[in-house]
Length: 63
Ligand code: F3S
Image (cartoon, rainbow, N blue to C red; front, top):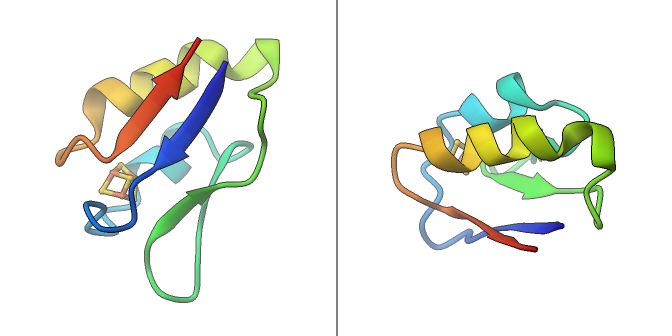
């Protein structure tokens, strides 16, 4: 699985990095990015959860 944050869509709510801090991190610009691709097997569930719960749908996943 690989994950991506669309920076044009992310509003910096921080939910993804609190759900899955080992994959998503907040940058100095206040927006999230993915710093672990491909996503480790152990994190796929929480990345999926972050994707499902991002309020603006900024996270996309490729399996
Ligand atoms: Fe941005 Fe969505 Fe994460 S708004 S900070 S990608 S939960």
